[in-house]
Length: 294
Image (cartoon, rainbow, N blue to C red; front, side, top):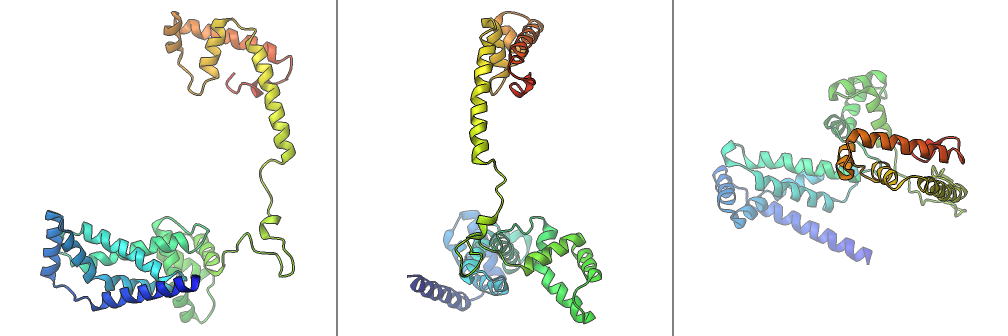
């Protein structure tokens, strides 16, 4: 089934390439006329005519990005998205040819696609890092051809200065471009069945620590409930609304509700907290372990 899907995909891609290359180019006046019909009258036929005429730009740009090992069909689809965005935003009043304007949108769409899919390791998000990703091989080859030697620190410094990045960024990008992603499900050896992920340390708590943590949490909740029971109803309300709710109310809000000043609420709260500390200290040494805000 996969083979059939691949054949169908290749056939569809080839058909798109043929149609794109056969579409007649537009004159400057025709471009502007179609763009105005779309912008002023939302004429979808004009938009489609503009897009079809420059599908060849997508094909040409996809060929340039093939070296990153991604399917050409996917590159073409992303490029078509960029072409559609260019057509939708093109303003004939800028006096710029649509082909020039669209090329930038197509290239940007494909670059973003490559950065998202080339590696499971995030490659870079800033403009200089993207420039480094797409230009490192070219600049490295140029420097190595000129010196006749493998890229050294001086060459990396030159690339860093040219692309406005740090020399460490250049080194890290070299490592990423030269290495391949390894599946965590890959086996350690051909004979064995142990996977790579089996040897990765788990930073989370162990099952024993989880059980102990749950038991301790239940115990602390019991102690806190017993301490709260020693407070008066008004003190319990102040503690619950001020300290034990996700969004604690202000002293002023609580004072208005209780019919007292916010200073009086503060006094009642401090007295209640002192009582809680006294009760909790019967069980633990640090009452802050139970009430972080106490």
